Length: 136
Image (cartoon, rainbow, N blue to C red; front, side, top):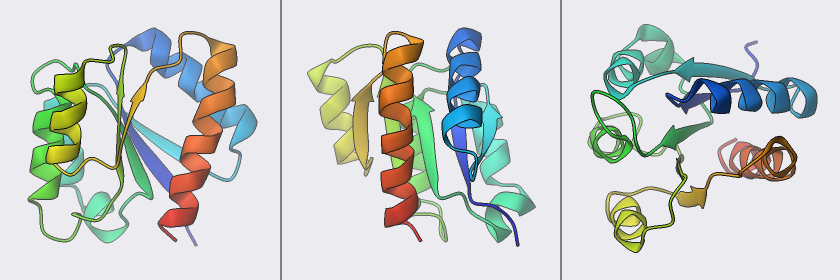
């Protein structure tokens, strides 16, 4: 049996490294697939692994190269078979237009990115645990 996994779509290497440290220390029962841009995310979401074994949730940066997070979210919400995978948008800004668009497109949460490792360690496991429980 495969362990539950989440997908992180993030282009910032520092944020990826921080997220890896938190997940490895705090979420040992969960695997994370990292994808670094919008087009690569779409390719992953078209893969056999994703189709046969969807993740429990997707954490997605809003500002991504090649295709932004809201475009990827729109793609996911229109893709048969994965419409119900929770998508949590992470952003370094707290712009009301981005928040409104996230929810209008079917995003499950919009969260301002924690600024440092300690904040990330406090927030990320709670976010992931909630969606792992929600999406059993």
